[in-house]
Length: 59
Image 1 (cartoon, rainbow, N blue to C red):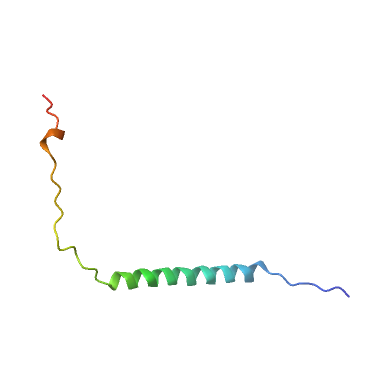
Image 2: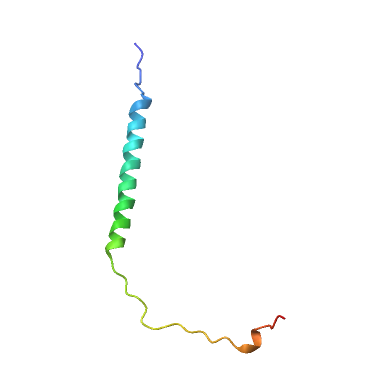
């Protein structure tokens, strides 16, 4: 008597689809959670003074 291992590509395909769906839902949940957090805006204005000598006059 021989032992046969029943392998079905359909079952493995279903498992892969389920795993990908779970991963996608997990990533979407993280994005949604980060979207609900309100990060504070910077309070100080950033100003950079550029010296006049770096400008070139083109005529």
